Length: 139
Image 1 (cartoon, helix red, strand yellow):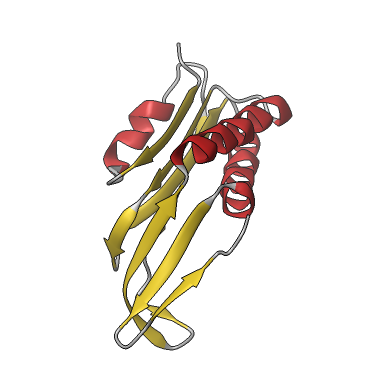
Image 2: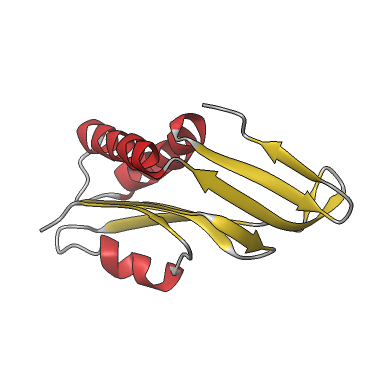
């Protein structure tokens, strides 16, 4: 049984994530979905655009997932990020973990999203009505 699902995709289908994390020994499944919000700093967002160096991003995502598996007793982990242009309310990232107990999957899910945003080479451009701005100039 595969423990890890790590992907860079064009579109995120959130409905399948529960089934991907489901495991007979899991009493807890936690999922975080990040989506495009309508306003940033009081400016109306039209869309976000994501670019990545896919091979490097997948390697970093796998490192993060494996670190989570070492830190917590998890049955499954999902990390999936979208690339391309996404409109308001579209999902752009989903992370999740399943475990026997809720504490491990809550803590692991927070670690997954926070560490992904800090370390994975995925760049975001915010597209407003009158301008666009690249953000997330790291790693």
